[in-house]
View 1 (cartoon, rainbow, N blue to C red):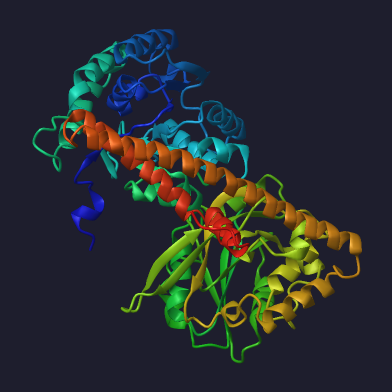
View 2: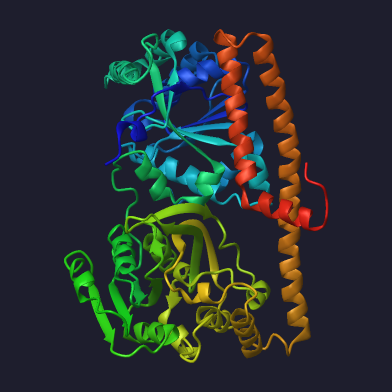
Length: 581
């Protein structure tokens, strides 16, 4: 059982940084949700930009609400909001036009702090905007223009109509009267619902774990880009507390799921448990036990929650044969594969099913790689999570190296059978071999959303662990796939594949160089602020504000140091004999 210290922050912090970008679904959310932080930002000299997305017409006259928003901004001391004037209650998380507009805004503003509603909110516009913002940020691949614009951003989710589970409390006692004055500018709203009373109640309640001098506090759930790129939207939402139905399941084609397993009943139970958490149910789940320990008892525990069918193979036929048996047994238009040591994140089948409905033949999402080790008590402990797999489809690069894990793909069943299905003679890279043959018939379409976890589990007997990079088994398997798919016979194709890989390496190197420059810049800024704190004696309100900024900069440095791209860059630099700094 988690203690309260794991769930409630027992200290307050600040949301310092500039520029500050506020996204408000309706005119008033910028005050009701984060008014205190906005006043503090303005008083600290930060550049602040507020964008209200809808006209608020479902609960009042749009023109009146526009005037109220201008008056509220004046009372907060922030610029007049930018208005997108979308229809109230029209926001959808999967709206590509909205996503592109948000992306353009992020590229323009390059925010250090991004304030948006929590996905734990009740109003559908609030939840939709939360998910839309999160997924746009997930697309910020290293080396991209978007990544450069948001690499140091902190996404702070705020609460309006639902209480969230925060990881940051901000003391806003000194500016609370200004916030209340701004809230009262929305006379048309506070006359309908008790917004001011709710604000007062929440802000007073948030004092509970803070020092006695704190009279009012605002609550936020803050995530940096590294967290966003390695956690699904559903995980982010769950961290903030119980949520309403995160997304509607309408328009998602039901998919079959094939689960391969052998002699790992505990892992099989975890894989099946991830299927119970899906936002949409699979059409069928076919568990193929490849001659291992019986799985009837494990599967029976899920029989009332999942549409399970079990294929017990008396003798082991191998991974590829197990996959082929499941494929042949399936009946849906598309099939998704889940090995017992991996897991689907809650929106996996929803995202793939929607793409199939739109007519995408072979969609695939992004996966994170989770590195786990035994915890000594029969369970597993997560050591690290990386955004290793995924990226836009590149047939040339796929011919040289597989960057698309099988669990991320919704395979078109009939087409896969037409190209021969899984080669049952293969026990390593059988999935890659299949994807290469499939890619000759249809392009795979990338959906830049994290929806599953490819797990590396120490001591579980995985065949990839038995053939690590550089081993004779791995090299032989690589050569076999290249030879089977004609890479050695087509010199032009081989050159294209190699150059595609070189281009990817160069993109990563350029990103790493940018991180090095950012590292020097942030380190200098942090060290200068530290010196000011020392000169000022380390006490007083001004010193507290400076120390908060030092802590923020340390967070940015930690993010750079822990990034996979920067680590690999430094490793290569040391390998070339360049001195360490």
